Image (cartoon, rainbow, N blue to C red):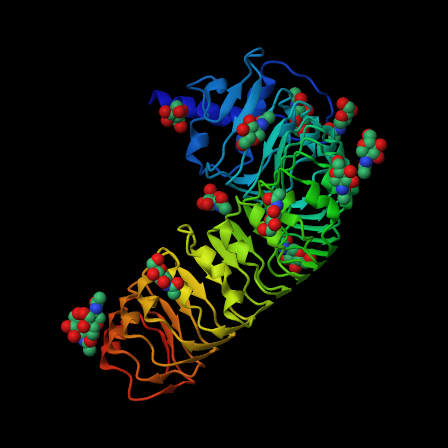
Length: 474
Ligand SMILES: *[C@@H]1O[C@H](CO)[C@@H](O)[C@H](O)[C@H]1NC(C)=O
Ligand SMILES: *[C@@H]1O[C@H](CO)[C@@H](O)[C@H](O)[C@H]1NC(C)=O
Ligand SMILES: *[C@@H]1O[C@H](CO)[C@@H](O)[C@H](O)[C@H]1NC(C)=O
Ligand SMILES: *[C@@H]1O[C@H](CO)[C@@H](O)[C@H](O)[C@H]1NC(C)=O
Ligand SMILES: *[C@@H]1O[C@H](CO)[C@@H](O)[C@H](O)[C@H]1NC(C)=O
Ligand SMILES: *[C@@H]1O[C@H](CO)[C@@H](O)[C@H](O)[C@H]1NC(C)=O
Ligand SMILES: *[C@@H]1O[C@H](CO)[C@@H](O)[C@H](O)[C@H]1NC(C)=O
Ligand SMILES: *[C@@H]1O[C@H](CO)[C@@H](O)[C@H](O)[C@H]1NC(C)=O
Ligand SMILES: *[C@@H]1O[C@H](CO)[C@@H](O)[C@H](O)[C@H]1NC(C)=O
Ligand SMILES: *[C@@H]1O[C@H](CO)[C@@H](O)[C@H](O)[C@H]1NC(C)=O
Ligand SMILES: *[C@@H]1O[C@H](CO)[C@@H](O)[C@H](O)[C@H]1NC(C)=O
Ligand SMILES: *[C@@H]1O[C@H](CO)[C@@H](O)[C@H](O)[C@H]1NC(C)=O
């Protein structure tokens, strides 16, 4: 009963005794009740469903409310508001601008919508602003211009639009800038080159365009640069290769042109992830990339690269090696030497060589790749000869795509040992003989193509055991 009375009191207090939020009122007073009233106004602006906010009641002092942290030196003032993944639904109150001691806001992973209130510009001490993964809309909050102490700024995964403001270049302390998965348009402002403390920039999945400003190469501390899935074009500026600390570089899914410099690998000695897929890049893979020995993901797929794949590339030992849909060539056995190096690589999981101009005899070293390999694709090439029976050793495979080549001989009986196969693509080759009965062992098989070959006989009855099979092309 006591708690009910308390709740009623709280209800009346929070609904009747607060001043109406009004942007016309500009009086900035700060007494010890300000922050409490602002917290209640913040709560009031949200749907009352969140269990976290039900703990914001009079039974405990507001500095102990969940997610509220008051300052050590100013014990009545809120220093941090930490409510990530708290099921918050609603808009952010203008009263947020009243927490003049606020250093850190984390309201990420909620369901907040509406605009980011302009009063955020009053938070001069703000260092950490994380609003990512909500449904916030409007433009980049203009008044944030005032918050130049910000170190971490994450507005990713919202519905923000408009251009990136050039004044952001004055945020000399900025280390993290995450604006990915929004609807931003326009160029990367030249002023960003002045963000000398930047460690990570993620602008992926927007509609940004233009070329990468060449002065970005000045940001010596940059470790992560993600510009993928935008409408960027032009050449990759040379200065980018000066970013020797880069751990991850993603330029995938844009319109970049040009070649990669031959000494690229010696520039990026720390690089772990390189995503260049789905651009218009031409020329050869620089053999020097083999010097970038930390590379774990090498994605060069869907470009216009050509030449042979340098043998040394296999020394990299990545988890993902993707050169799908390019113009890479192999004519003689030696052109497949890169595979010899890859056989020492136990961390390889995905190898995509499909849709190139790779010819010559079926490279039997494939069978000595790690049995941990999950995805192997050499489809749509010019490969002749027979599949080695040793293929049965690649028991980790869930996808095996050999379709669209000139492979002959029979499909090895041992294929039935690849118990993890979900996709088996053998169509459009010159296979003869019959489909092995062992195919019935592949209980996870979902897609199987064998059409457009010279196969004889009927589909083995064992196929009746493949309950997952959704697509069959014989
Ligand atoms: C008030 O907050 C306390 C502490 O979090 C909680 O145990 C209590 O249930 C809350 N009271 C109401 C009425 O929500
Ligand atoms: C709190 O913020 C609101 C909305 O921005 C404003 O109208 C009000 O004057 C502020 N109150 C105090 C005490 O600063
Ligand atoms: C976004 O937030 C929701 C709700 O907290 C969560 O379930 C989801 O995993 C988050 N998404 C990402 C990409 O973090
Ligand atoms: C920005 O800061 C200036 C100087 O402190 C202040 O006068 C102005 O009201 C602030 N603007 C906003 C929108 O916060
Ligand atoms: C910035 O974010 C990082 C990682 O989340 C964190 O360790 C660091 O303390 C934050 N910096 C500030 C000033 O809040
Ligand atoms: C993003 O912008 C495009 C057009 O510029 C629009 O069609 C789309 O609805 C916008 N998406 C969001 C989430 O705002
Ligand atoms: C970087 O900052 C300096 C000093 O404030 C300024 O002169 C220069 O114009 C800025 N550069 C860019 C590209 O904004
Ligand atoms: C790379 O850095 C060096 C040394 O700081 C500098 O001389 C050179 O001009 C830079 N290259 C580019 C293309 O920016
Ligand atoms: C880089 O790689 C190339 C080609 O593999 C090699 O010839 C060269 O010696 C390497 N350079 C360094 C500095 O390791
Ligand atoms: C595969 O490895 C085995 C054992 O190291 C070796 O004997 C064999 O010649 C290799 N096969 C191919 C085709 O490289
Ligand atoms: C695969 O199938 C064949 C014929 O259906 C059967 O003899 C063999 O024991 C099976 N092998 C495995 C590993 O299940
Ligand atoms: C289907 O599976 C059952 C049980 O594993 C086995 O006895 C039977 O021989 C299989 N049928 C065919 C046609 O392979």
